[in-house]
Amino acid sequence: MLLECLALGGAGVGIVAGARGVQRVARASGALQSTMLVPLDPTRLEPEHIDVATEATGTFLGIQDELLIDRMRTAEIKQAKLNKGGSSISFRLDFADGSRAAFKPEQINPQTVPRKEVAAYRINRWLGFNAVPPATMRTLHRDDLVGKLPPEAAFLANRINAETTFDAEGFTRGEVSYWIPVIFDSHLDTVDGVMNWWRWMTVGEEIPPEKFGLLGQLSSLLLFDLLTNNSDRFSGGNLMASKDGRVLFWMDNTFGFQIEPEGHLRSRTYLFRCQKFSRKAVAALRRFDLAALHQALQPEPGVLSENEMASVIARRDVALRYVDGLVAQLGADKVLVFP
Image (cartoon, rainbow, N blue to C red; front, top):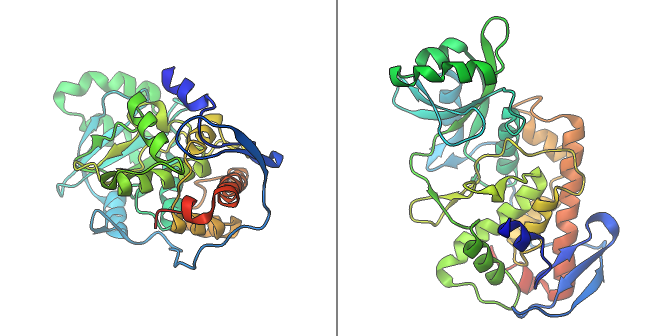
């Protein structure tokens, strides 16, 4: 509740009125100061040209995406372990070749819709990011899950059968994601964490040099979470990082893509606490239209409906109006500070 109060309270950084034509931008000097209404400028300031990825290829932690995806689609399952701590069904799959993947099946829990993780991965790749672990759809049989539980976890079969959506032949459709070997909580969603990055991401405040790279990733994640309407990010435990704390992993995207043209209040509010962004991220968003979205999702047909896709583009417009309002009021050199 305290974090929600921090997020929804009006202190010191910009608040946007979405598609309503105005936005409230705080003058930046760290402390609470007066705000002013700034008309949304229809003429967007175009950053320098960059090359934007147009397909889901690249590397993740040094491994080619397509190698990971091909393996996850076909590898023989040696063991399935039900992950702890979540309110929905999620597995760690150990493959016979020694590799691993996370698997989320279709299920009765509405907060987990597997196809949406695949959509988030494909969109992240088109935009030029490599922060969402590679993910793809895969159909598994009950025997691949319940039948591959370790003996000491056999008692979990009842829960798996009750919550997983199996068809009459015992199959379930779900998504497999690359299993990151080591992750740590970034603590960016704690009270202290939010207060710190909120201050550092306000124009006029200095970013500690050792935090510059991490906060650049966070600013792009805030844009991405509005685009995908992931209101679950700051609910606790969904801001994971590498062991050295330098790389953010944009995991757990199965709750997003609700059809809300302006985005969920939580997603908008956290974005509007940030006044510093990446030039490349903003440039990529400008080029991300409906045709680009169709192109991004072409390798995985059906992961988003037409209405869901239209809602994505509407939220892109909200994000760009916010950034453009900041640029018009505060200047591009102060807002577009990350590469």
